[in-house]
Length: 258
Length: 278
Ligand SMILES: Nc1ncnc2c1ncn2[C@@H]1O[C@H](COP(=O)(O)OP(=O)(O)OP(=O)(O)O)[C@@H](O)[C@H]1O
Ligand SMILES: [Mg+2]
Ligand SMILES: [Zn+2]
Image 1: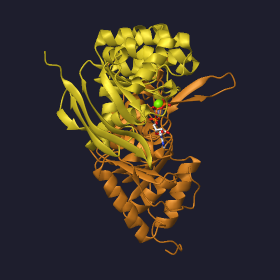
Image 2: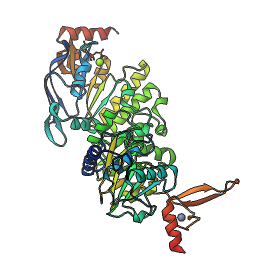
Image 3: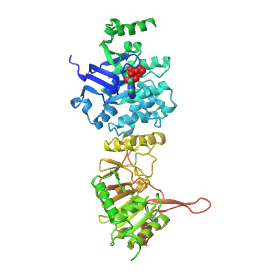
C-alpha cells in the first residue's frame, strides 16, 4: 500500500532573538497519521506547531506540503493569500483557548457556517444541516445551534471549535493542548470525542500535549522535545514502551508513578 | 460672477487630484480608493464626500439635481443645491430626466437613469465589513484576498434568528464579481437599479476619505443564499397621491389616531406620475 506523504519537514529552526524556539526538526507526515509532540514546558512544542501551521515564519528550514490538488509545494514561500486560504479551509488549527478560534458574537451555527462559507458554500439549508451534523458528531446538543458560544461552558466551546474546524473536511488539523484549559473530568470526555471522530473520518493531525496518557490514547507517531530539539522520535508504542533517550525514559517513568 | 471662490469651490489642483482618484475607482469597480479629502464648508455627515466628487466633475453646462431620501426640497438637499448655485452658477432641476448630474442621499430615483447621466452618492460609511471587523488593516486584507465569508455569516445569522434577512437598507452588494460594496443607506428596493445601470455611479465618503465607483453596465449582485434569494420590499398599498404601485413608498401618519398613508418617497416621480395619469 502506498500512503501519501503530505508533509516533509527538514531542519526546521526558529529563534526568538537569541532564544531557541525549536531547532533542526525533521519529520515526515503521512495521510491519516496522528503525530504527537510531547515535552516539558518551554521545550518548543508550540513554536514548532506555529511554524508548521504558518502562524510564525521560521528562521530556517524547509516545509514541503502535498495538497490533494496542486501537487507538492514549498509551504514557506507560499504567498500570504494562499496560506490564509489553506488555514481557512484545507487546514485547521484547534487552539487551546477556544476563544482564539471562535467568534463569540456569532451563534454556534454561524461559527461553523463561516468556515464552510470560506469554500464558497452558498446554500443556507446545507450550512445549517452541516452545522447540526458536526455539533452532534462532537456530542453537542444540535438544538443549541442558534445560541451564542459566550454562554457555553469551556468544554462546550472546545467542542464547538472542533466542530467548526472539522466541518470543512480538512486535510491536516493542528491542535495545541486542546484540553489544556479544562477540568480533568471534561478533558477526558473531550479526548474521547476527539478519538472517536479522528478514527471515524481518518483525519491527519498534529497534536501538542504534555500528557502522555493523551499520547498513548490518540497518536500513531511521536516527537519528544527538550530544549527546542527532538530527542527521540518513532511509533508511539515503541517510544513509550521502549524509550531510548534518557529524557524520554524519565518522562515515561514519571507517568508510570501516577 | 464674483463669488470669491474658484468655480465649484475646490481649486483646480484639488479637482484634478480627485478626478484621478475617480478614474482609478472606475478602473477597479467597487474598490475603495483613499483620497486626500478637503475640508468643505459643511459638517461631516452632510454629504461632504459627495460634494467633493460633484465639485470635481461638474461643468458649466451641467444640470444638477440633489435629493435627500428621494425628496428635492429637504434641508440637506436644499443647502447642497444652494452651495452649487453659489459656487458654479449652474442650472438646477428637480426633474430626474433633465438632470445630467444627480447627487443623492439614501435613494436612487425611480426614473431609469441613462448613459448621459452621472449619479453621485453621499456615503456615511464606505466599509461594508466595518461592523464585522473593526480593524482597518484586516478589512483591507479581507478585500484584497476576497475573503468575504463573514459577510454571508451576517446573513446566515439573520435567517437563523428571524427566518429571513432583515436588513432592509445598506444591503451589501458584490460589484463586478469582485468587491463587496456598501450601496450607502439606500433601501434594498433600490439595489436592483444599480445592476447594469447605464449611468456612471460614483460614491464619495468625506469623513473616511474614500471614493469608489460602479462604471456603466456593471454587474451588481445583492448578496444572498441559493435557497434564500434576495428580495426587495413590497407594499400592499399604492401611493395615495399618484396611485403608483411600482415605487418605493414612505409611510406617514396622518392623524392623531395613527391612521397611515403611503406616498412615493421620490417626489419628482410622484409629480410626473400624477401629471401623466391626469
Ligand atoms: N514570543 C516569544 N518570544 C520570545 N521567546 C519565546 C516566545 N515564545 C516562546 N518563547 C520561548 O521559546 C521556547 C519554546 O517555547 P514554546 O512556547 O514553544 O514551548 P512549549 O513547549 O509550547 O511550552 P508549554 O508547554 O509551556 O506550552 C521557550 O524558551 C520560550 O520561553
Ligand atoms: Mg505551548
Ligand atoms: Zn406617488
